Length: 373
Image (cartoon, rainbow, N blue to C red; front, side, top):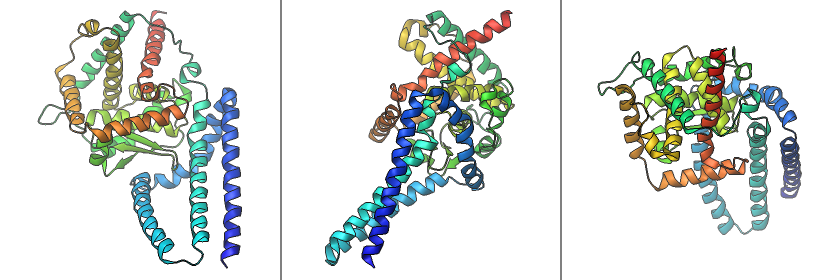
């Protein structure tokens, strides 16, 4: 019986490798044809991912978290059992090893194929700047300052309406569950002005139960392409949860480049009917823009307008929170994330998140021109 089963495994291996090879060839083809990649991201990707979104959307917990934890336990168990059998059972030892190796290669091939179709191919589409006709060009420092001050002023006005805890830090009235359940409404509203942001299905990001441990990696959210699932760190400071939810939803809508995803989240936040989402988007954008100002001219940074007391408390709470989790795990996690992004043609790696500033600047300039007409 062993040999027929081994032949079946070889056939499955060949099929998995052929499918993976075709996926890689498709990726190379679409890299050279962003127009066709745009068609894939807008029409084919939603069609392929809808079943996943419907089925897993009914599950109230993070399936990705269950998969990661379960896989970790299963791998350890299989290694222990497999090594014991290889050592103690001499019969068919080589065949057992080859069979196990083939199964691992089949599984890895299918996982990589899934990631290509549900994530990597979307890197080949037009940039959001091109799709929204935003002009990316070198900007004067004064434009950066004007944008930073506008973001701070808008955020300050909204902050006055929002609830606080006993320490004066923003709190979420309905808790994180309400935020995650209503995040998609921002895309529904924004799509009236920017049809490209239409959500289709009401995607609900999933809370990660082990968020307090996850924070040691410095990660606030993650899109799991294997399941087209948005996962959120719910232990992070409250004011950042809405923007994080909007960011991860953008990945499920076919956007892959981090600067595009951040900008899509920014627009969805601005158009969201709930002011806490608008505040979260404005503060997140302000942090990116003010960091750019500081990087270009520290003296100019000192001349930015003073933040409102509520905003200062929120940002200080965020700084203190992440300071607790700084360490080797966070540094390793950042390097891994940087390498993964570079492997997906994001040459700037983790710095690509901050490139949303260029898009916000172009958008701000375009909106000002509209007002002058």
